[in-house]
Length: 443
Ligand SMILES: O=P(O)(O)OC[C@H]1O[C@](O)(CO)[C@@H](O)[C@@H]1O
Image (cartoon, rainbow, N blue to C red):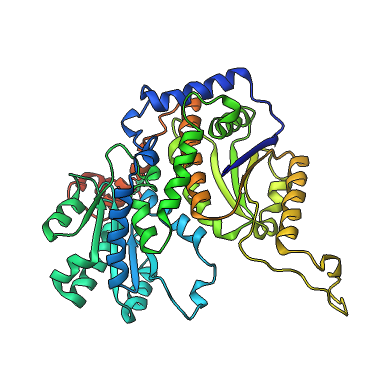
């Protein structure tokens, strides 16, 4: 079954033979390990390396948490948060909070900000519920999740005692290093490992994404199956035109070289909004370096046509857009005829909402193309775990290829350290005394 169709016919560019060759060479580098950042290529064959045993181990741990807790607090930031959040949102009923009958524990997120109000509201909200937590940090030292974990750990220990806390806290971190690893070992928490060679933004198919998703009741085996199929479809040796990841990577680089510096990822399905956020980290951290890189932006449609539509249609012509289009909705809603027709909408009577949404999508596509915004279209058959798994791996593979075409190391992120140094200096972290004086003088 084809899980993804890529249409580049409305980009206005032809992929040159030279760009095709670069994409093929870049894809080969991902498998030969001879490119920059080759210590971080563990994600390339990750889907096919996931055995049924591994899935079972994750599901077993998830079942324990599900049994104990009505609310599971998932702590992490960046790649240790966005993958699980993105898939969970995509898989969830948008109005699950209104449903009286709950069959699954509620998974909420923490440690992705340092907002006191968010933290306070979370701690208040969970007072009435039994809780457990999954704390995720590859480095084990990231400040935001570390603060959240200190608070949630204290709350769990206060309620259930230290011994039971070790049944309600699961850590996902590096196999040997970092404060979280030390803490988890000391306290006897069950631990899952983030492999050394998988960077945070490529880790959604490790326990980082799989455990929270399994805890929320997502079919992780189907998610992995979708990714495995895409791993095969994008393997080195696949002819260029048959490899959607190579084609996407090549087209976006053609567009970039032609002056299109901003890519807007959009969808007409609001539950894919966090896929956009996950994608922004994936591409932003991978390509935005050495003074280069397409700026990844996003919209949710049709909502943002009424806020960003003007700029996209008419503003500076440095944009192109990539639309994730969903072929089949899961539910059915039809517009009914109205005897009075005071709203003038009877011309839509008998049509499904998805048909109207599709016409909006096609109309917008042509309007934007006419306005000078090239359009890439990615169609998935429906929103389910299998299709989403396939989509995630497609984007990862294309990101690796695209970064190599651009000539950067797609697997490091040196730029994110600058803010951390300033923050530690401002907070008087030991070891930052000199920097502290210097930065305070600048305020
Ligand atoms: O899993 P960790 O080590 O807490 O890192 C979280 C995120 O922070 C970053 O390292 C950036 O600071 C991201 O690359 C990463 O996804």
